[in-house]
Image (tube, rainbow, N blue to C red):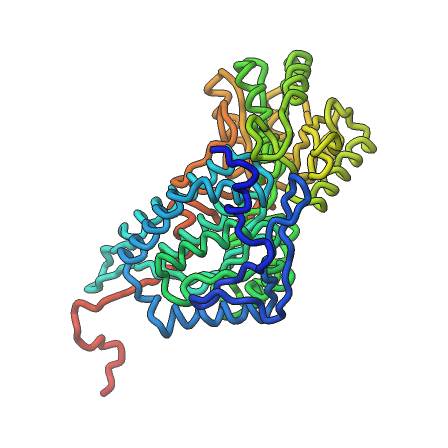
Length: 506
């Protein structure tokens, strides 16, 4: 599906006219008139200009979403109608999958094969939630009285959706699909540096004919747009995916209005490999766990826990394979790992590598920015592996969010579990072993929300996504993600309509 360089501009559109926000069914510029340049991380070139919103723009979008929900009647929208709209969006997105894949590759840096998989995932998310929208939601109870007791599920109302930069399209799409299927109205804030595919998604929403105010898009920073969404009393729920520190601040702010909030935050996930594993499979997945999407994955297997007796055989092969990873622009055929998303983030990752060296960890490979040839223009960092680490090192405890793997060793099953749980995070984890009982014992011991046995990274729209501890609260995806956007109401109907007789006087 490779495009020639001359065709890139057709995918991107004009780089001179600012791309707009979408509020109350209209494409608008920000109140301030400010704009922001969007950068291709593979070469540092400007690939677009977008309008830059702030609090006043967020307030307009919130007002439109509230009006659409209450005054315009979206609160009573029919599930079948919502499902039909989602299916129309899925079909149009599928027709344009190559276009959307290129947008995310050019804006985010990931390889085309990863971007294409994201688009295909987004299509399936829309179809999954379209189907779920019309399914039964509620219960009835046999109670000891002449009462019909029941529970109904109702849309929570106006929802603020704050999207990260590492999966620009698929993360926005999964939140929109679930909230919309539940009957909510939404205000979406994409990441400031990767908005292009989300803007293009809203073009499809507009084309399909979503009612004014039901879906809104506000571009801008988290400090301005995101803060307004979280603090506004007219926003009933926030769904945020991003860093733990930001999530903590959002949670504190949401408390001021007792706002419902779900958070999918950071991770420092363990990938536990026992000596009795299938060797080639374990090496392959150890690489995939950390270097997919340049390590910019919240659930990345950034800590490799090796049984001590396997170390001397496993690590040389892992290092050899890591050095063979083809790094370059994501659109180039054969490239396996692209650039980091921005210069600032690249510098953060490089700083962590220096911290690892200063802490005494052994740098086994990588550790540098790639500055040869045309790659010097982009934000490329070599696949990096550290050995000789200790649990208290910052590179072991803190999320680096880049192509940096730290190796720990263990002697016993119990020690493996203790090391695996030895951080503030609890998003994901995996175990590799040919002993099925041991695999299940270890997985049950992990304090993590997403786990794998003899694999790493496969995820499904039908299954919930989220973590323990400081990796967040609530869940995305599956029925669990759908329920995040629903309120629970108890209804009791008297079937014997006569005076209660509680008070005897007349």
